[in-house]
Image (tube, rainbow over all chains, first blue to last red; front, side, top):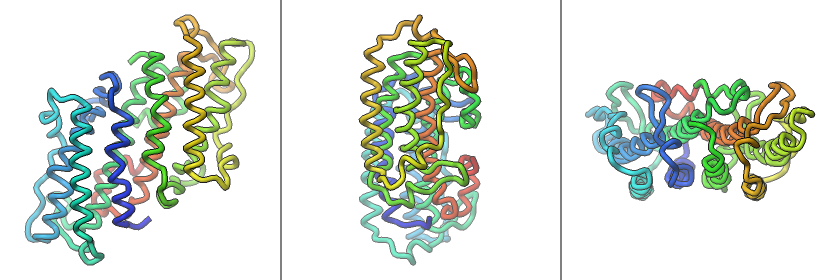
Length: 174
Length: 174
């Protein structure tokens, strides 16, 4: 499948609602456990997505459109949410993510990006030259893989409850 | 986390809505691609979940409660949906899954399972003795890992669109 701006927006728009249906109102046993050191709980993921809306996707797309390759992106802090989400509830985070995402989608739609725009390049601090098309594709992949992570982490909470069935779930060892 | 019937029902109840928000109305590029031979597309997963509601979880739980270890479960056909979903639309499947699941949850709640019930055993055709608690835990894990699979398969559709970012997504090689 090739990148398509409308197909990408279709997915990006749904993520807040998917996470709300999945996570809203659950007890912390489901939402606050992770997969080990330096891994994310579902709660951490939602904080991480919020931080991405504020400091990553839109900011980097704007840099590509305004500065091209003249200036590298700021490094993205993958662990910022450990500090920023402290003391907040899942439902607060879900609400903030939904509101930031919907604002960023409105902004993205307002750009009316052409193919030539999507070909424009910026500089990632570690990866080097990247195109706007690659950045926006990554935004979609980032959403989907974090939903995969959230549900995998939740599944792992019952790891020792499923007895011999564990052998059928390769994903539980990811 | 230990198995808890109410916590399990909380998750089982949400799955149809999660999948609906995620998959309803999407083009086939998102829903009909898989990860290679003998793997499932999101469309296949929803058919597989329908088949599970009809022939697996409830049927096996009933066998444990009525026959104990006297009779092994019927083997579950993991590939039945390739035949059964043919010619159907995603939205039809999502609707059928939601209706079967809600019926099965009503049935599960009506059992008012005690700890002694959850300890009861049945015989899995490959795995041998399993408890009702393990079966119901597996139902939950099965839901969550299939949502993880659906979103992973969708993410992989942009595998070649994200350029050098691929290096940050270990999950894309799962």
